[in-house]
Image 1 (tube, rainbow, N blue to C red):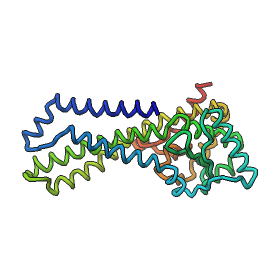
Image 2 (spheres, helix red, strand yellow):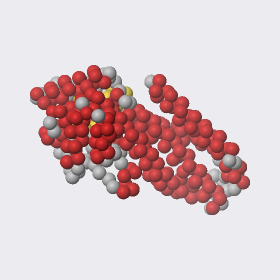
Image 3 (tube, rainbow, N blue to C red):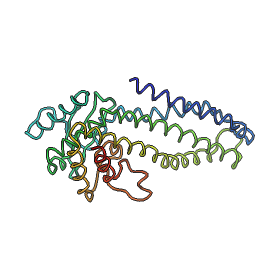
Image 4 (cartoon, helix red, strand yellow):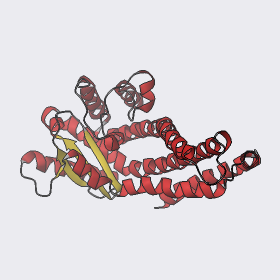
Length: 295
């Protein structure tokens, strides 16, 4: 809870600094001189409220959405020795990581993948694909589970939700400034807001949201290295490297993980060129090399 409060306080400070900076550079005066009557402080607060509300709401319903979107079946009573082993392994890893036992599930997918989600590290969900269980060795599966437990123990779901809240805030903020400027300065709307404001704002939100997602993905890639490190501590460095090498051998298999879960999966497919800026995961080669340097 303290980490969340500190993060929110930091984000509030960012919003306040942005407001002060715009005032110092005379942005309010520039807008007023061009017929744009816009209270930037009130706009920032409005955007922060709705920006964080959207990301935090998504966080709180993340487990339910994950189950629905992937068809994950929660293991309550193990029916096979594989399910029994899965529960015992997650229980052991959770205990070693210092968190409560998360829900454990299996989702029907051929590709080798897994994910973790949940609003709280003591109220999480860890799930693996049927394909991963069928084709990976027990040590490799354990390493993948350790990686996902690492995400939970590190609080990555909360952290990325808060980062998304900051991004949402500034996307909404600057989109509305652009919309007001176009509406008042270019189209000379005098009373209220014209159609140009709404069209421009929507377009600006789409463009800025797309560009800003690169920031969220950058944070996601950094968290993947930390989750790999946690996986190596919990399951062993060799086992973690072996699991990533096995994933690399299956890169031709399509990944059908919902977009909302790719940041917390073990495998997010491969993108090249500029598309790499929007990857939720670093290239497997980089992750393997980082683990080898770890020793």
